[in-house]
Image 1 (cartoon, rainbow, N blue to C red):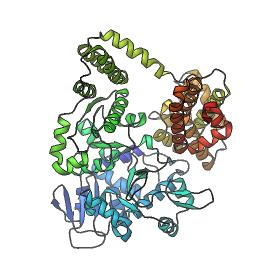
Image 2 (image 1 turned 180 degrees about the horizontal axis):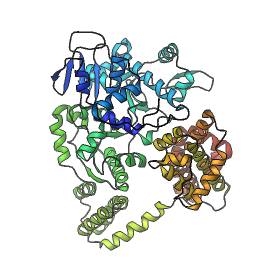
Image 3 (image 1 turned 90 degrees about the horizontal axis):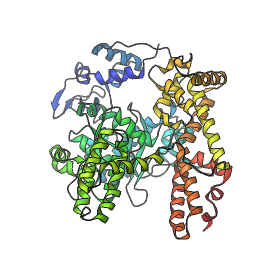
Image 4 (image 1 turned 60 degrees about the horizontal axis):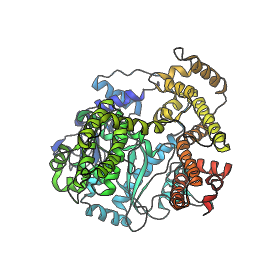
Length: 607
């Protein structure tokens, strides 16, 4: 059977009338925003079966069957997945263009399957395991009923080896669990579950597939929240929590609401504020902002109003401004977070805060005015130091002009002078490659490794539509620093780029066509396993490259810094080293083995 394009599947899913599909065989009655009826799967007579049209899902609170329109047809009538998609498409009048079957399976499929099974197992433990009473009690403290939490995918990861035993009985290889970030292997060959005694939150990709987890510790210990590590399917900086559910509401509202925590998202969605998402960390990444830009160009940031929350707010806002968003900031009442506000006051209380949200620059000005920072020359200078990063972040020329005019009005400094300052300080940040000692071994090796990684990644992408689709999901164009490499990748990643896997891009410059020809000569002989290794290795090299450069630059600054600054720089250097070792373990090991970070850090590292 020919393959159905992914974008068409999404279109069909979005257009499906789940209420109509299920209502043909189940008598449903409205209950609030849901519809209830007897479950068609376990044969009960009570109305324990819920259809939630707004989210496009169904769920039985007794037998725990759930899913979307496709899975309903598959479970109820025995259809396979393509048949279910075609049946829904027929109902909504969508014609499905067919594509030739992809050459070979997606090598990530075992990971997706394993993580989905683990998610179901976590949910079962939360419902049934006596040990999970602490987790159930914690939910009650947060004013969450178990009947509400289970359909949202919350689960419990117990202590001990129960997860590994259960997965072994289900036939899931432990190597797959290790690669998926579910199980950690020790140096002595033993292993243990990554998530232990934690309330778990499933993290989905844009297509709704579970790709990883966040885990909230239930007792004492650190970290309070633990996320899945980087894996072939989980990329923290390129996933946005709840976007798979919120994307349509974001388009409808023409705005995205950003909050900090899982419970913030879930509570706001529960009270009917559906255009809400959260970054998987303290601040938004460039990739996450670019993903959100596909759905809207307006954002409201609603983080906690304490000092840590404000710092995260302004970092997130600056990233959004760099992607030409209009950014407003909401201010929560003292002592409240979005979860508590929505739980106490419902959607009306939250909407009141959103209605009062103001532009991010005005929010900064508001804070500084309360501190009296515009009452003298010195204070104004310090105020501008706080405000100008937001001006510099604004990529939209209109937004930047408005910001400059506002600061001129506020401080008396001509906007032409402010614009010059913004331009001068922005230019170094646009440099593609931070400068280090010319001709150094570190520079040459790093450059060579990056060039090879860019070439190898393109070799793999040219081999099969599977790899091209995977690259579209995981690889932003700015990972490519070579102009010709980047140009070829942009041609391939653009809509319809699959054709250039088999024929040269005739409209591209000569240098791009020549590169394409050279890569095509070397692409043969790559099996799926070999291509997977090359793809993963190249991605880690390219993603980590700017971070390791920053570490090199920090080491160089330390060597040149006066003694009074050494201790602070040493602390910062060690902190970044630890972060990189955790985030990019393979690349860390490769680089450390090649040249040794103690040597790279210079003599001050031994202080």
